[in-house]
Length: 297
Image (tube, rainbow, N blue to C red; front, side, top):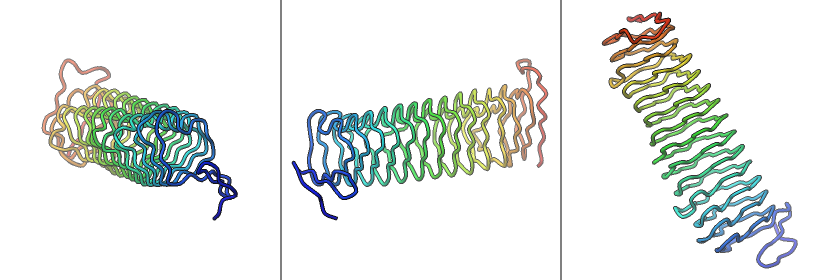
C-alpha cells in the first residue's frame, strides 16, 4: 500500500491514517493533539505527554519511555508494544482502548478510563493500576506487584488472569471473573455484585464487607475468609487448611465440598460442608443468629 504524499516523514495511507514509521520522538508533547495516526516501530524517548489529547491512534511495535504518553485520548489500538519503567502513568483519562500482545513495565497505568480491552498483556509492576475505570475486558492478562489493582472499577469481564498483589478489587461493582489465579490479601472488600468461576483465590481476609459475592467451583485459602458479607453465595467450592474463623457476621448460602477449619458466628442463611473442625457460636453472634450448619454432604 503506497502513500498519497509524504511530508516531514509522515505519509497518508490509503485508509486515511497518517503513517509514521521508524521515527524517534522526545521532549514535551511530541505529537500533541494529533489525530488518525498509524505509528509503526517508533520510539518515544524521555519526555512527557507525547500523545496527549489525540484520537484514532494505532501503535504497533512501538516503545514508550517517557511519562504520560496517552492522556485524554479517544480511540486507540496498541499492539506488540513495550512500555518501559519510565512510562509511568501512561494511560489516564481516556476511552476506547484495545491493547494486545504488549508488555507494560511501568506502574500506575489505566486511570479514569472508559471501555478498555486488554488481551495477552503482561504487567510485572502493576502497583496502583486500573483505578476508577469502567467497562473493562481482560483476556489472558497477568499482573505482579499489583497492590490496589482495580480500585473503584465497575463493569469488569475477566477470563484467564493471574495476579500477585494485595488489596485488589476493592470497591468494585458488577464483576465477572473466570479461570483466574489470584494471590491477594484483602481481595474483594466492599464490592457489589461480583461473581467468580473456576478460580483459585489465596489470601487473608477475603471478601470482607462484600455484597452479593458469588463463588462457583472456586478454591479458597487464607485466614478469616468471607466475614461481614451480605448475601454471599458459594457453589461447589473447596476451602484450604488456613480458612479458620470463616463467615463471621455473614449472611450466606454456601455449599463447600471440603473440610472447613472453623466457622465463627455466621449471622443467617445456610452452610453445608463436608466437615467442620470447630463451630464457634458465642455471645457476640448477631441476630437473627439462625444460620443452618450441616456436614457430611
